[in-house]
Length: 240
Image 1 (cartoon, rainbow, N blue to C red):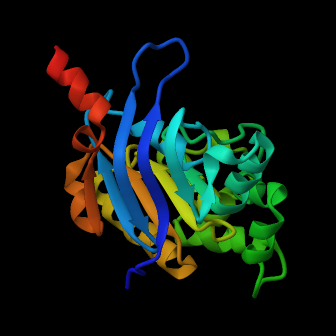
Image 2: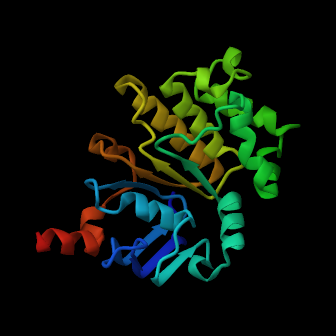
């Protein structure tokens, strides 16, 4: 059941990369509600990664309104944006961004070292964050004998699932997934998405997923074509 409460609101948002003369992102309006499962798609250059950076408090727009969980992110100092991101947003990066010298389980619990909020939410019924990490790894079919190994010894598909467990730990309100099934065989993609959505539903997390594979769109509440939403991309295509 999707709440009517808006968790993300964008209005007249403009973003221009440093050194560029024209904006790469121009969005008049976008509202995402609490608990929604959003499928975001579009061709290369349509602004998908830039938008994820906006929503994840990594990039700051030069103009417009961006409110996440009621906070106006562009008005927050950088240190507060960093804290906000650590407390409230989980990321599954396309290139995983796992720490190569840490074990599988240490990679999963890493967010709880930077956020007291996520540490507390990871342990309401479990004695340790490690116990919650092992639950997530088990749910995502990472065998126990791998948990203490360096993450670099795992296959690409296994590393992607470890990245998902890291993003989910501590029940962040928003989970941002950039091509989360790209390293998985077709047979595993649907199972992975089912598990991901189940964990998001259990935690009450809003899921925003970017993918080029539009076959996945049917699993989501709403599909957004960024090439249409982003007026900067539309203007660029008209000028060619």
